[in-house]
Image (cartoon, rainbow, N blue to C red; front, side, top):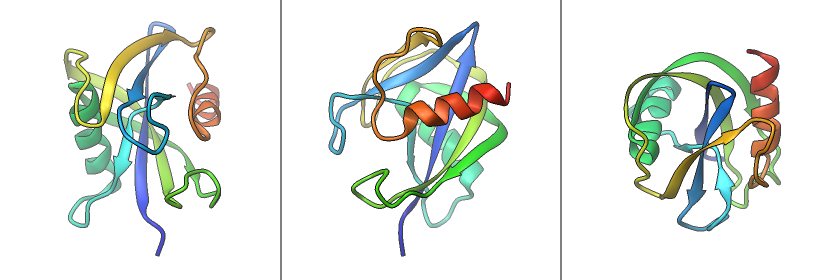
Length: 127
């Protein structure tokens, strides 16, 4: 069975929060926050936990923006559920497997790993 994960898109004031990956795969590349769903949690619980671990922020899911399942999207074969999130607390501070967390203008995004550029585009269409 292929692993399942959640990726989170947080957009505020025309900017999106990205992380620089501190581990392989995609070490050193920019990405949206995300991580694998644990056996004892829902996708929404995973989204909250991973966002807190990687960015220091408390968030809540606003809407599911898509499911991304191309077997070539990630060398680990991960299927991800992407959520548009809303901040409810905290301050941005990189942690866990995020070496850096930073806001980027939606009009000036860096190159993103895997299909994260498409995920951000899909989320923006749903704002």
